[in-house]
Length: 192
Image (cartoon, rainbow, N blue to C red; front, side, top):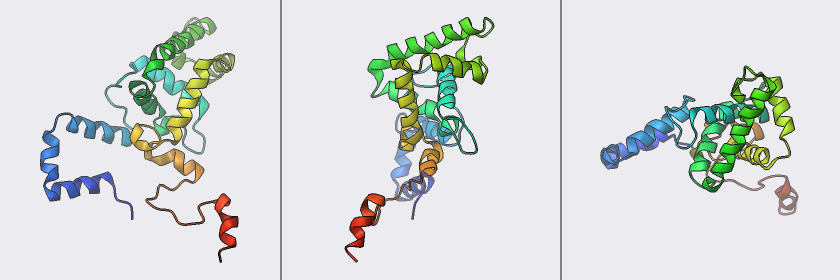
């Protein structure tokens, strides 16, 4: 049986621990941020990315994992994972990442004089620019981050509502029973 965060918080309140939590510094803000991300509402601010950078990241991620009959990077909140990553484990790469985003805008302006930000271009123009930079370290890194944000544990900002896990059939369960998958099925046959 899976319990929700709401059930967990209710249990905390019943035990008395919840009475102290809202008064602790940052807890209310963290809970509000988590609720907004989970609800699909963009938070008022990103921790690392500017609004323009977040728009560019969202646009690129949406071209890498587009929304079709299934949810894509936008619905998974990949931009929130990438924002988290550059504030945590990937901080050393932030300057290069920002330079890559600026290059996208430069290429957008070169492609269409009226389009300054990459995010404002039509999808076909975005695809053409991304094809031009497909072999660069910037694009490789952004593609990797998009994939991580699509399939990571939702507590890191991406994979909102576990949409990435649902796409690949992964069940987020507390325990699993054998056989775990195709690699275990043959071994399990001999045990019967």
